[in-house]
Image (tube, rainbow, N blue to C red):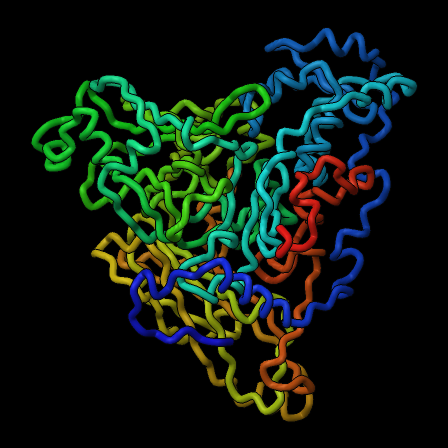
Length: 612
């Protein structure tokens, strides 16, 4: 599998250009893909026309659409969907997409909105809503109620690489094919996972302004050219979305009511360039050095750095978050206002012209298209900070506890900043048949990382699901300080096949492998085997063993790979190689009545990546 040589290299040595990435992507296409693999049920084709349709409820009263439209204010919000009438007045603050969006649709039919936000079409949302159904629409009004156009704010989104797999199309959230992650130490820009909470803004660099305000500081505005005049700092760091592997937690026994449902690949590494936040704060008159040394306190009790982006939803609500001020002033914390990514200007998808980079912290805090910084004694009040990324106990569920916000014990749901140790095998690919003629050993490789700058000390690997282990060889071609290991470690190993496996192959029989890894960091944290002890309703901080199912076939030449893709255009899968619930690109193609998209972004309609 082209194991990386464990030799030292400089950041420039390992930087990959777009042309190199394109060449490797083309080479990856040589892997044989079986387009007909998987049963119809596994591909989601078992869904019937009545899927997502509310059941008949003749026992409930009938309301006209005119009556429904009268219930469109805070505290009194009705909605219709395919003939059902629902009272969701209680749900205003519990809606994962934010209260403004729920108010936007109050008194109307949900179908035109969900035509854009199709993550609602995976079935469990409709099932939950039925509990709050209060009536029916007259049959003659059902189609008319949904006959209006809801503008699509994502039409001008950037074009994405075909190997950036859409875990959600609107807003776009894409993860790279994980078998490509170990081609380079640095992830090429076009394959770096893309997390968008809202539509991607198109910002003119000459008009860009960064506004800094808050307690103990005089309000300042910076242009992009002002930031570029300050000393430049570069840092190589791994970013991972707080909800990476969220689909693992959405299984037969659990439901996750927040998106996107990342599958596995929302983790990437890049070299970022920009100006240190502490230098900008110093420019604003803050004595960051004495604060960092503990000689003085931050003025007026400031404890948090609040951030706000230019990106906004249909109602004007912007994305934002916050992080502890200690990280901002730490001279070794390397928090930067980044305007470069892998030596180029930031791509639009990654925050052009300026984004925040907070090494060692969760991706959600590293606000893109950065517009405002506020010094405060409180965390951000944005729902993305105080609601979406909280870690609750396994007995807490959305249906029972979080739909009506706030929950009784909000204090038991801490905000995530740093993430737990994790690792996963990238090659061989999930659900692959590997040629094993005359094979006596098997090779594989993957990536490992831990939040907070903790170093990966060891990665253990197994080909039998965790019964027997061996330490992998580690590869990290850059040097980073103690407890400042911001970037991932790649690993590889070649494991001898047990005698009984070799004998089966010699008899012409296929052999099933269950490849797993578990990483150990410098604090001796190690990945748990199962998700059950830490399952949480927001689907964050997921790090149980990732199982890769691989088949060895002695009838195929050694090294030949045939990949079985169960979901069209989506080769990544949850642990174990299958989706427990129908996937359909996170609901995009699941609903029988929503199978195309006339409003797809113009560039995304192109099929030739070279032309793009």
